Length: 185
Image 1: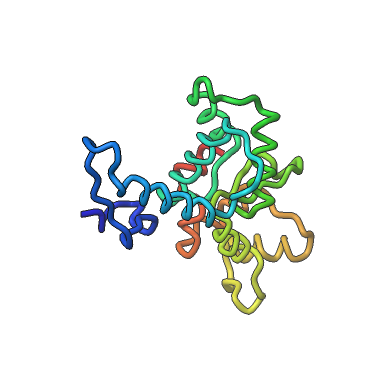
Image 2: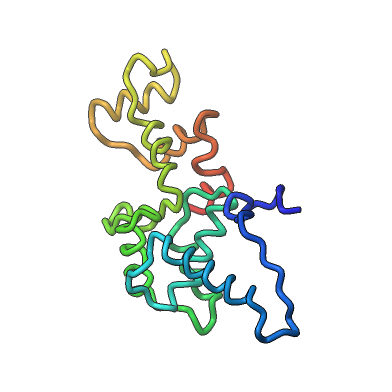
């Protein structure tokens, strides 16, 4: 029934509970509580202090990840935060959230002037992001704009934002940042 659901990989089939909602003493309820506690203990963030107001942000990022989004702007996260109504936090608390999430490896966020406007919510995507411009000369195209960008990067160490988008527009890197996302950055 759930085999085609987008969160299929997170669904656990090993334990099934049959509960009688009319029986307050149903032993299945206790069994389910024990199973949930066991799952909670296995979470990577178990035991870490985390404000409850961060939960909606964490859930939102999880949904984006499940939808295949790899990179978002901080502006987009701020918009999502505003939609959380009473759980919305100020920008300083969002920065704290991002730094904690970065420290435990759930996302990549660098509080540096040129980088702080972007959040890599799928850390494994960094491999492709870096592969787009860190490559051996033998893999460079013989001519064209990509060759010019890589030669300039190699000689100056400078990579312009427009050059990065040109590199990411190559078919091998189309999953990094969809064109619709590029227009928003």
